[in-house]
Amino acid sequence: MTTAPLKIGLLGGGQLGQMLCEATNPDGFEVVILDAEDAPAKRINGHKEHVTGSFKDAAKVRELAEKCDVLTVEIEHVNTDVLEEVATKGVRSASTGEMRTVPVHPSWRTLRLVQDKYLQKEHFHQRGVPIARQMALDGDLDSLKAAYEALAFPFMVKARTGSYDGRGNFKVKGPEDFAASIDALKGLPLYAEKWVPFVMELAVMVIRTEDNEGNLQGVHSYPVVETIHEDDVCKTVIMPPRKVGADVCAKARRVAEEVISSLWGRGVFAVEMFLLEDGTIMVNEVAPRPHNSGHYTIESVPNLSQYKAQAHAIMGYIPPQLKIEPAVSKAIMLNILGGALPHSHDRLVHLARTAYIEGVNIYLHLYGKASKPGRKIGHITFTSSAGVDLEQTIAPFINEVDKMRL
Ligand code: ATP
Ligand code: MG
Ligand code: MG
Image (cartoon, rainbow, N blue to C red; front, side, top):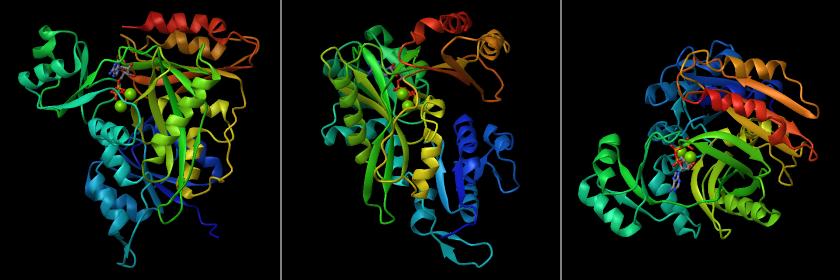
């Protein structure tokens, strides 16, 4: 048994990395971050070993690996070639000159697959998981016409790689949108996806564990949440989903666990899903890391938030019998997105700092990032017991968020 601090190398030091550091500090893990000097996560975890640079730069990833026991990510848009190299061939030790392999969790195979949204969903489809019909595009007018013939209007044109918060998505309602979609997503590898007339979006966080030989040990799902997106960006997360039966929630968890079983490596994963009128659940996409839809776990599952779970899973510390039980009956998370002005969010933040609502706990998280229009700069989580109409009681907060909208 080792008592030396275990070093986790983290590619990316944004708010997800920041919350990972907040959660792992009490456990005595050391998180070494590769990102820009002023990355938010580095402020939580001040020490001299952090690496300054880009998580896409192979030399910097090797430098990070050389210092660490295991590597993980807070973002999937990383250099997977070098991650494969350090996990399989190894990295040279600066002190002994010997090569040493460094495990990467989740696996570089998972990261590489998930990076391409089209291939990711082909993988799920081949395993019998329902997804929206999709087809790869050449990015020219003819391929858009073929997409219309196969999928009908409306359909989504999406960038296969590099997208987040809907940046990389274009809804094509008719032939008049063809030119604009090509123009908006110029130069990116594209695919088309059938429009899904969903009644609700759901998400489930799943912990995946493996033995040291890479054999799947278990998948453990968190409660299902409803996610509400506006302009393709997540605005609100609600646990449990409103007016959804226990059978649908159980099914969503089963689908999410099945999807994550089909990937490789340890860690926490988010599964975004569409719920259709007839009860069908389709998988939208997977994020191989802690996720916006799992922020609520910080206060709702305090013994094993998604961040703590990420660290414990990659270290191999998750007990096989684990059952995730939330400590509260209801939670709502509101994202704080930057408004038109740098201080547009001040009123909302002040309200979160000063409000008292009987039976409701209010938790403010600011990420220390400069506000830019539409940028995720913080969130507020509200929790309550089952008897409280949580949505109703937090209406003043939702009004403030709506007032800030651009
Ligand atoms: P993220 O920040 O979650 O990674 P992203 O840029 O990868 O976002 P998607 O998850 O593909 O984007 O889409 C963002 C949102 O757009 C979805 O949550 C959903 O609200 C809407 N959307 C995406 N695809 C479809 C579809 N085929 N039909 C209907 N709505 C869709
Ligand atoms: Mg995405
Ligand atoms: Mg998404």
